[in-house]
Image (cartoon, rainbow, N blue to C red):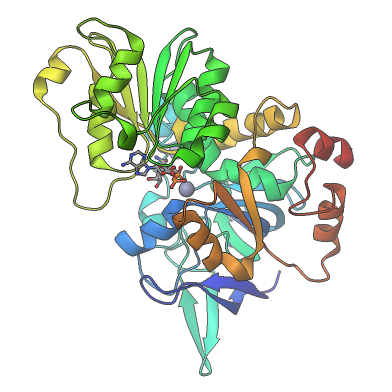
Length: 413
Ligand SMILES: NC(=O)c1ccc[n+]([C@@H]2O[C@H](COP(=O)([O-])OP(=O)(O)OC[C@H]3O[C@@H](n4cnc5c(N)ncnc54)[C@H](O)[C@@H]3O)[C@@H](O)[C@H]2O)c1
Ligand SMILES: [Zn+2]
Ligand SMILES: [Zn+2]
């Protein structure tokens, strides 16, 4: 195994645009795996995390990737060369106190070094030559999928079926799984429940997909942008509230409760905040049903902000919950989600609004901020790589092809 030189989008300083660079990626050490990344979704956290909680620079972002194992370090047994994988920003070691509890997916095995942008041994596998010197580049969320090759801890890789197009199922590395998992794993929503979803972006739509599958009788969506309505309706939203269109004196919470019933304490059984705003977190909490309603915080609030409500809201039986990666145990559950996609029972293609070359990663961020993209997928070139070319050819004309999940699955067989 030797060092690989490849293309990566690098953030050199806080808030700067990403720059395409030739970088070096060292071979994997013990317990590590080097992965050829084909594509990566672009998530809000790629934008906000390095700005709000910087571990340092330069750094290679990206945490919604899909790739093929290129080489494995000593002692790795859970994946082998050629396996298709989705890198996990929450690993699953299966022997830490969290993994063993069966109550939480927040595996703590490599949390400290991952938070510093380093591999578990405290060093980086990425570097770049600048003025004759080797400059280390930090990892991000243990994944760094904006590089053609990355190195991950073996416990941070979910092995998935090879029939799935990596340019699509990469989205299961964060946004879709977070929303869908929040419904299925964290809140365990029962058939016949009523629910409300604040924010109809990629995460909110994935929540709606889960609520529909769970058999909810009412799914109320809330967004300031009416352009989100057609897609949300297609996914299963039954009612829409736009806070900007409410009559004078009617707040969002009151409008939601009125859709459930005309009695004291009426509210939804479950609410989900998929925006990242502490005001909407409060509104989402307070609009749940007295006695049993539960609200799930998914959105990540700006640094330094706090959530608040009157204590009596809790006294009367409302519960506040939260979820990271939808409570999903990546290695155990992601292969099943990919299988559901392949049999047509989990939407993924529908979330891809734009497919762009990695060189246009900055444009993907602009599209996200303009509210135009549910998700953009950035694709790595891998010029002259036959394995990548064969994968792309098998999936309806390659990245950005218009094939459905079923077409793609059939094409790969
Ligand atoms: N907990 C986790 O593990 C996890 C994982 C992924 C993403 N997230 C977070 O989830 C949030 C949503 O992510 P996304 O990719 O869907 O974002 P997005 O920007 O695509 O969607 C947000 C939606 O909220 C709407 N909105 C904004 N302000 C609003 C307001 N005041 N009232 C009503 N609607 C409003 C926007 O119009 C947009 O449709 C982000 O905060 C992201 O960081 C959390
Ligand atoms: Zn994300
Ligand atoms: Zn663990």
